[in-house]
Structures are given as structure tokens and as C-alpha cells.
Amino acid sequence: PFGVRSLLLTGQLHSLSQQHHLQHEILTQRRMALDRLEREVASARALQRQMSLILGSPKGSEGLGGYPEPETLDLEVPEASLAVRRGLKLESDTKALLTLADELASFAQSNEDLAQTVPSICPLPVGTFVLTSPFGNRTSPFTNTVDFHSGIDLAAREGTPVLCSGGGRVVFAGRYPLRRNVRWWRYGNVVVVAHGEGYLTIYAHLLEISVRRGAVLRRGEELGTVGNTGWSTSPHLHYEVRGREEQGDEPVPMDPRIYILNYQWTGHEELLVRGRRAPAPAFDPLPSRMKGR
Image (cartoon, rainbow, N blue to C red; front, side, top):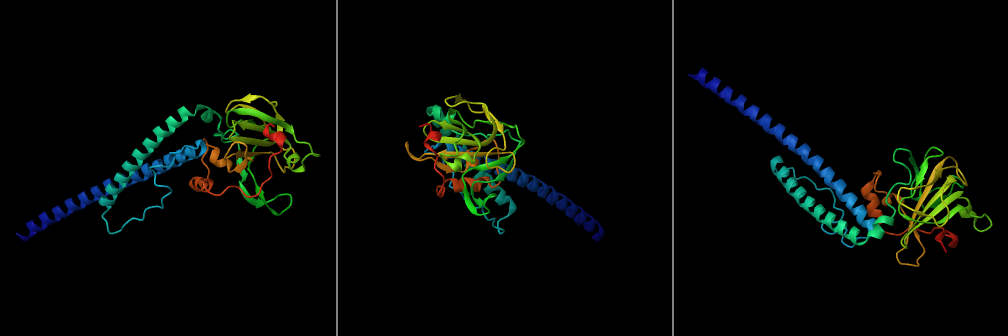
């Protein structure tokens, strides 16, 4: 009878609708899981590229395809097929990351001195500061003209401990004499640490200095406290990383955010791209006394 067939058809339609709804929920859950995994892989990729850049590993970027543009989804492809394709790409990326992790670990083991000395942590405890002036061109708060800022300014409470960002030797601790160089005198109380032959780090506007020239510091060791000395409008740390391409070269300012592994900056991936390109523009060279000479 027609009524029985209608009831059967209605039941089948309800069953199909429930199955479709269940499959949609499963696909949604899988898509969310893929989204999460892709974010985790992207974060791991950025961190490993950063470590490669810091350590100068010759194989640091192999197997990762550079800096790819986000993939445009093909709306003609069914969602299940897209999920499979994304899953296969994640598997490939994960294998490449594991290979790179092994290469970095091997490189660090064979270059242990470099791994111990290279600047790689934030000079202030995480959670105690605000970035108030980034690396690069800016409007000077004193002259109201555009100048090149060779480091970063981290605002923090006066007295906040300042930490050495990598193992090294103190080559300058104090205030640079006004009669010798007014620009460096403006930095107030400053500590300069040499990290082997490759890097120098600068910690300026300190309230107190707790180390002396010649002291050997470990990564994370306190060297002073945040202050407001020199040309400064409020308590903050001016922090610089300078690096040499070859031994004997003038150390060139580099964006310190690239050399901080224990803090995630806004625009992290873009920082790494810029860090692999042009060097800093004109800057004030370090006086010989601040290079340990």
C-alpha cells in the first residue's frame, strides 16, 4: 500500500539524514584536528628554522620547501579528499621536521661551544616586560626624527633582573666616558658580553651592574637590573645582538627577537624571513673598548 511505502521511505530518509549528519560531524572533527596539527607543525617548523639561523647550521632549511604561501583550497574537490590530501602533506612535513631535528641535534653536539655561547634566551624573565621599541627605523623620542634603532627596548619595573642571553665573557661593564663618545655615553650603565668570536650582546640603561670586566657568565646568569640611566624616558632595557660574518669583521646589529627562543613574538615567521635577508643599515660601530680590545 502507498501509506506503508511512504512510511518506509520516510524512515529511510531519516536514516540517511542521520548518517549524513554523523559523517559531517566526523569530518568537522577531523578538520579541526588537522587545523590543530597544521598549527603545531608550522610552529615547530618556525622554531627549527630559528635554531638553524642562530646556529648557522648548513642544512637548516633543507627539506622544508622555504617559506611557502598558504595553500588555496580547491572548492571542486570533496571535503573528504581535501582531508586526505592535508593528512598526507602533514605526514610529509612531519618526516622532514624529524629529519631536520636529528640534523640540528647532531650539529649542536659537534659544535658544543657554539651551542652553549650563542645568545638564545630573553634577557628579561618572560612575563615581566613589554616591547616598546622594535629593531629598525623609528622616530627618535628625543630628536623626533627618523633614526635606526639597533636593538629592542623592553619596558619593565626598575630592579627587574637582567639575564645573560648566552655563555660568554664580559668585555665592558660601566658607563662609557662622555669625552670619548657621546652616543655610547647616552646608553647609561651598560654591560657588553662577547660570545666567542661570533656574537656580542649589549645590555643598556641598567640601574645596577653586578658583574665586572673579564667575568665569565653562563646563559641565564644575572648581570644587572633594569634601570633608567643615560638617555632614557622610563625604566627599560635596551638590548642588542651584534654578529660577525668573519672573524675580525665589525659586529653588525641583528634583530634580537630572532635570537630569543623562549618567547614567541608577533609576526614570528616574518622576522625569520627578514633575518635571512639584507643586513642592518648604517649604525654606530662599537668602540674598541666595548669589543674587548
